[in-house]
Length: 130
Image 1 (cartoon, rainbow, N blue to C red):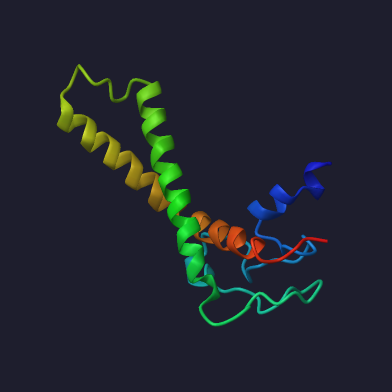
Image 2: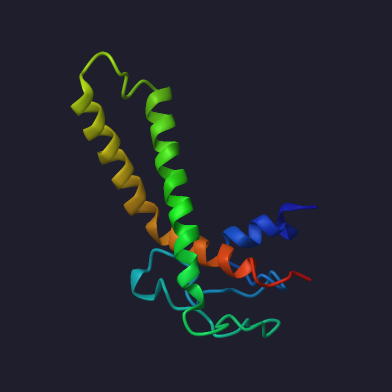
């Protein structure tokens, strides 16, 4: 299986879960914040319905929460690994401030991507790929 045809690639690029060609979102760039949330009603390629029912994507909040927790764990592991928060030298409050500052910054920078990927994961749980 090549990278171009992998399901993981289509998940990260927010492609249609059925045909893996059409886009889920109208705007490809997640950082155009004005159009970040606008989705196609159906796939432009295979006509798969993306608006399953009213409130369908509320469940994507659970996926988003899981991705956010994973991000916070990754920040903690990275800061501990690179000795940015060595637990002995500076004191507890310095570590908490460093951890929160880096974590919140990473979360704000990655928020549009987390939003889109969580919706992509959520719809993939309910649509079978060809």
